Image (cartoon, rainbow, N blue to C red; front, side):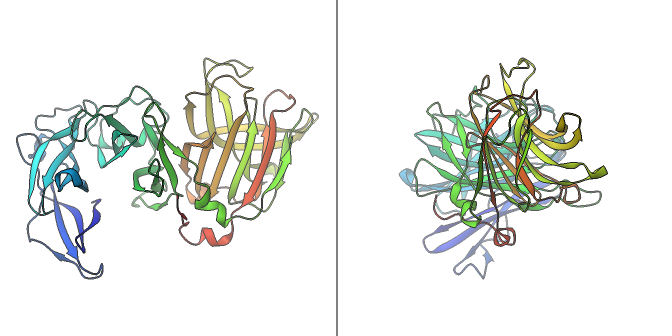
Length: 437
């Protein structure tokens, strides 16, 4: 089960989890050189216990006692350690009852259980919690999924399985979901395309470096697996809203020079392919109209149609054909066919979509950015991560065409600029390196 390691007084302490007889417990190993490890005790150092936490697995809706994924930190003002743990409260009931437990220690070995920092009335489990502060605000992040058996309401029904956050004015209590969208990154309810977001401090005290798992769609009789995401920068707005932002240094050092076009589409040209040799890259465009966007992984497909993937902006149900009202960003398929009015695009089924809070009517310019690395696609709107999706390897188009398109009623200046930077082979064969923040 998910664990973590931290350094203290020249030694490294690594917490890990296991489940025996449907009860989860946390053990501890230590090392002086990161190569040789030994248990501090044959027994677990952290176990669920009363009066706050569920101990009997038959009382749980998923028939296991949750006690896993500790996030451990040193709290200098008290010269002690705190652990935040995925758990369930005693008498949690059939709906909700998931909590983030708290424990305190002065030596990382002997622990005292404290009341939970947060108890959910809708979630079965709040996995892999993490605590940090930004701009004086206390945050707890957690990861959850429909797969725990309890459907739950979220701010955006299209972004339901992933990592979310809670806020408080105190360190150990008072946490609640904010009034705004508290999604950091997520995927559709029936998908686990992204999971387990974690962060580390950066050289900028107002930013953290955030990363997570890109998970391939599960195949029959196959375990979940995937890859680490490209790093993002985690920051807070003035109202406390957390944002995952584009981190230029994480990938741009591994790209070739950009090829850029001004005014790439017009009423007579609805498709502009800037490069045909960039299956993996960073693709940018300024769009001012609904159904305008970025196309990538383009190439000849069925019946010689030019097809691939696309990201576009579309009005939500309260919008109209002129793009007034709420907007949505969509990742899906697109194909182009030649007809009496030239080459026209047809948009296919969405693979992922998300409502765009804070973005109203177009034609106010919207900056779209797509980062494609193999089967992993990140979509940014105005430099904020909005979608992170993982395709099954056998469903990912293999073409190298990338550029801009417009699928609505032809109009001038639907896309005012597009640029394509191809990722080099080196970045595809190793984990991207983040040079500073």
